[in-house]
Image (cartoon, rainbow, N blue to C red; front, side, top):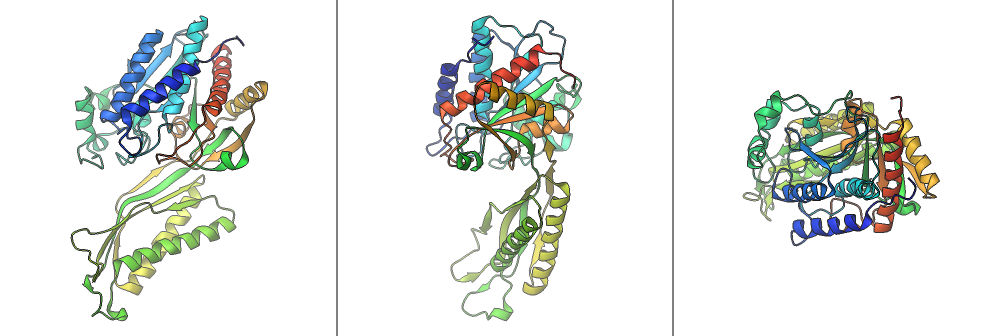
Amino acid sequence: MNSIEPDFALAAELFEKLRRSSFDGVGITRDSYGKGEQRAHDLLAHTAETLGLSLSRDAALNLYMTLPGRNPHAPPVITGSHLDSVPRGGNFDGAAGVLAGIAVLAGWVRAGFQPDVSVTVMAIRAEESAWFPLSYLGSKAAFGLINAGNLETRRADNARTLAEHLQDLGGDGQRLLVSEPRLSAANVNSFIELHIEQGPILEDAGQPLGIVTGICGSLRYRQARVYGQYAHSGATPRLHRHDAVVAVAELITGLYQDWAILEEQGHQLTVTSGQLSTDAQQADFSKISGDVKFCVDFRSSSVETLALIDQHLHQRIAQITARHGVSFELGEQTRSAPAKMDTKLQRLLHNAARALSIPAMTLQSGAGHDAALFSTQGVPSAMVFVRNANGSHNPDESMALDDFAAAVRVLDEALRNRSLTAVER
């Protein structure tokens, strides 16, 4: 078994094909349930067919590429990730996990190795909520967690519904509502996701790999708004102003102060306002702004911490409303639950790294991943992070292929162990 080598050349070739097919002139755009994501799915399906893997799709068009085991009726071990990207993102976010699984199975096929339990590489749809404002859309659909209202959710860039996008690709939204869920805690052995780290921890530590202990949850207001009063910039004294820009600036500054205090008290938290805009039709250099759109993104491994920062948000809004004579509309609140990674799988990954003499540290994920949804549905789940310079969700993602190869070797060892050993869950 130790002579089996993942097909790194195939993975490198697929990375390049993905880059060429989804380069938008600045970065990588593989739009969820759009042409960019679909081209990626078509490429991986063709590759899997060439390798002789079994292919299937569920009602949400998630792609399953399976090497059957000697016991095909046993719950499969699943690895994989998503193939969509944010607009003008990087080439490795998500895709690295799918290509890692394909590299492993390609090596097994070449060596004539068959596991006891089937191993599936899953290419998951629509993980990036930049397109549809739903966390883990593809994973949720696979577990039967999508409702009729979700099908009417509109994509951020073109305002067309999820149902319409599914129909464009040959899917059927109504079938998604009535069909049996493809996945459940009873029919999945485990899920192991390889992913680039999207922050600086591994880079700063000089470590190629990380084994994830848990994934933060989120509490978000995606379409918040503050209304003030438009007025002349020169003719309106300070005490007569109802300035929406000043109000939202004060809110964001105050939330950062609350964040610092909560961190000092031992809370793990991030606070972000990634979108901020005045009305393009009414805003002017010589006007006080009466309308500002913004968003708020809180993330933490603790549900209690998320509830606490949400209280701070509402308290500050009440104070700012009274002080500046403005009004806030936060809009719909969306959430994703924090998730803990399975301790047995963490130990399995650490043991694999030690056996291969590959350094691997322990860390938590501040970003959300499909593994969180698998975990909250009762599936034993784990994640391997690969060092990545320059962060993520930008065109400058920089994962060294040597680091990727090290992570794939660890994944290969873990998948073989998991698929050959009768493990008590």
